Length: 216
Ligand SMILES: Nc1ncnc2c1ncn2[C@@H]1O[C@H](COP(=O)(O)OP(=O)(O)O)[C@@H](O)[C@H]1O
Ligand SMILES: [Mg+2]
Image 1 (cartoon, rainbow, N blue to C red):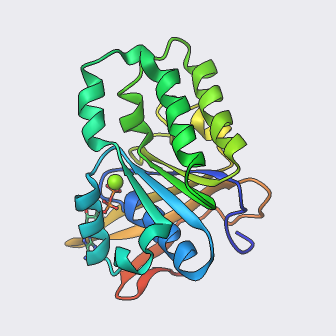
Image 2: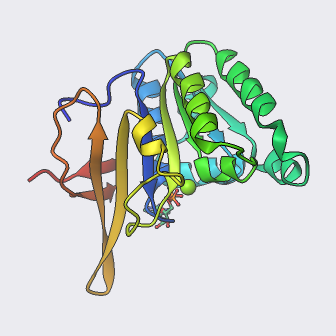
Image 3: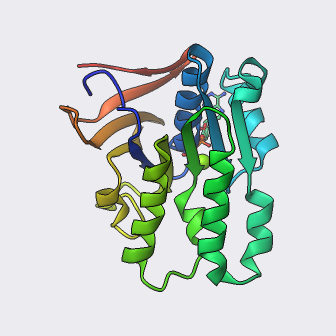
């Protein structure tokens, strides 16, 4: 990938359940913040903040090391409440979300976990237009943003509507394949604008010290 994900890119992180989408996105955020000077925001609509932080601590990422610079916005509870309310509040909700991100000082990285959970809050009238507006609002923020998308490995497109694949600058796909009695994890960068790419599947190991990608 010629050294990494370019700043300001919008990247889809897709794969089926348990492929470590959340862990990988958090890992990138955590290490950027730990080793750099920027702040970040992890927006969770799936897992509660407590559940997320407990899992990440188990993966060797103690949140106390990044403290106030890695902000978690827990919308998992709100999601349950919104589900019963007006699904046409989408644009208001989106504007509010963008304001919240802008309110985080020196915020350079954002994770939205997940697009599918967000979609469950919305009645799109015209997905092509509304999704375009959604991604443009994030692009205007200028942050490097990771959108997590639940997507089975048999699906050709990564986003639910197929449009996300075109609107985002990059796509990282995580998969698992059974091997004997167990399974192996793989990572594949399908797309990364302005980078020369090897789009093969690379074995992804989870070690004591973090993720390792096995190069050929
Ligand atoms: N301490 C650990 N070491 C290695 N793998 C773990 C550990 N704890 C959980 N896992 C794995 O992490 C997976 C969940 O990761 P997660 O990032 O939440 O996946 P996703 O977001 O793709 O659903 C679990 O299915 C489990 O296989
Ligand atoms: Mg997840």
